[in-house]
Image 1: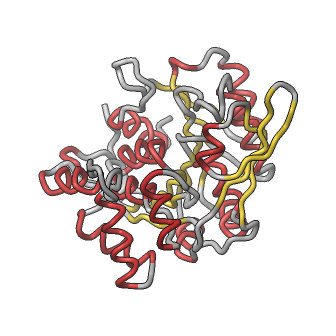
Image 2 (image 1 turned 135 degrees about the horizontal axis):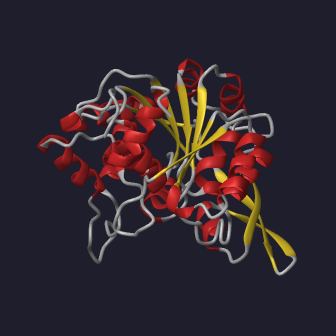
Amino acid sequence: MPGDGVLAGGESPVGPRVVALGGGHGLYASLSALRAVTGELTAVVTVADDGGSSGRLRRELGVLPPGDLRMALAALCGDDEWGSTWSEVVQHRFRSEGDLHGHAVGNLLIVALWELLGDPVAGLDWVGRLLGAHGRVLPMASVPLDIVAEVELDGVTSTVRGQVACALTPGRVQAISLVPEDPPARPEAVEAVLEADWLVFGPGSWFTSVLPHLKVPELARALHESKARRLVTLNLAPQPGETDDFSPQQHLEVLRQHAPGLPVDIVLADTGVVDDPDALEKAAAALGGRLVMADVATSDGSARHDPRRLASVLDEIFLQKR
C-alpha cells in the first residue's frame, strides 16, 4: 500500500522538495510517480534532442528542442478530466502529407509561447498553468545542446554527434560530452537543485537523458553541492544503441566515471531485473549509497515502470520507511 504521503485521486500532498532530472520516456515515468508523492516537484529536462518534431523546430526557429519538455508537462497533468484531456492534446501528433506531419501539438504550443514571451521558462510556466500541471518544468540549459559520444565497435572507437546519432550508431557508447562545452545553465534549474530535499536521477536513456545534466558545469556544480539527498532509479532494460548488454551495476559505474565526486544516497532497482544483487550493492556502496530493491515494473512484462508501484516505493524512501 502507498505510504502516508501518497494521496488518492491524483491529489498531491505537500511533501519534500523533489527535483527530477532526465528526459523522454524515463522522466515521464518518474514524474508520473512523483506527482502522487509530493506537491513540490520540479523537472529539470535535457535540451539536446535533434530528431523528429523537436529537431525540425530547433533547426527552423533556433529554439530549444521542446519535445522532452512537453513530455514532462504531460506527465505532470492530473488524472481528472481536465488533466487527462490536456495531456492527450499536447501529446497528439498531426498525421498528414504536408509540413505538419509528425509535429506534436504541445511542441507548437510551447514554441508559440516562447516567441510571444521571449522567455523559455515563462512560456513553460504558462503551458503548465493551462494543463494544471502538478509541478514545474525547466530546461537544464539556456541554449540547445549537441551530445557528442565516443562509440566503440569491434575495438575501434569513433565519435558521433547528435542525440539521434548517439542512439542509433552501432556499438557501445563509452563517454559523452556536450557542444558547446560550457553551456549556460538555467538559473531557475540551479536554484531548484540547491533548494531541493531530494534529487532523482533516472530512469531513462543513460547517455542522452541522464548523464548530460552532469556535463553542464554550473548545474553539475549545484548537483554536487546541494544538501539534498540523491536517488538513482535504474532502468528496467538496456537502451538499444546506448547501453546494450549493460548490467545494472555498469550503469552506476558509468555514472561514477562521468561524475566521480557525486554522492548517491539511494539506488532503486526492480527486483525482477537484478541478476547479481551483491554486485549491484557493491556498486551502490562505491557511490556512497545503499541499494533498495522493489517490484516497480508493470505487471504486463513490458520494460515500463508502474507509476503507482513506483510512487509507493518512493514515498516510503522519502519517509525513511525503506
